[in-house]
Length: 230
Image (cartoon, rainbow, N blue to C red; front, side, top):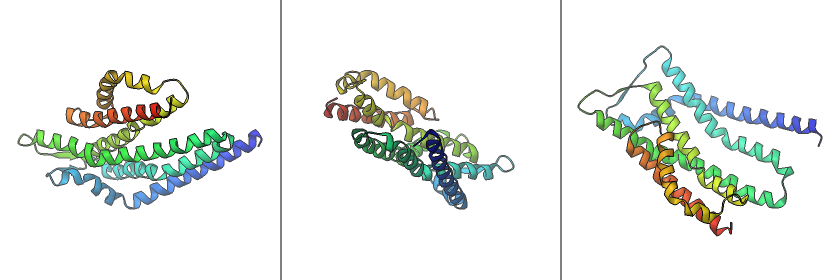
């Protein structure tokens, strides 16, 4: 294929990706209120009420939730189009290596989002509600609440990519499994710092709940690199 053929193929794949994400966003917007009720569930039972503090705040919040959800649903299509574009230029060994990396990365990303929704988000919100109990009434801005929840979910999904990065470093020979395991003390400190940076809340409980899985993922990735002979 000539350079212009590659550019044309890239244009078509970008168009398909944008179309898929756009369709997913429109579909999520049609059910945006149902999505918002699902994401509000962790604190509604505790008496928290949400307020619209400005004209159109709830409308723009539904757009934000629909955008994040549509991007999440459209991510597999984007990933497929990227793989289909680069696959013809890879060797057979590179193709065999690419499949588990892509699959593992996708599974870990969605696992991080599920973990955030089921564990991290309820823990952080319960901390804030219980801390304020008896002192102030919990009336929260709908926009700030979803900013907190969505950032926490996606940052957790991205942080779960640690083993994928380790495997890439191991396969390229930059770092060995033994070297990764030898710095575990620094990794403990790094996991705590990363959790403090990635979580939008400042409570120690949420940070520890994220730091624990990060440390486990790092050690698991290091052993995978070591067992692969790297």
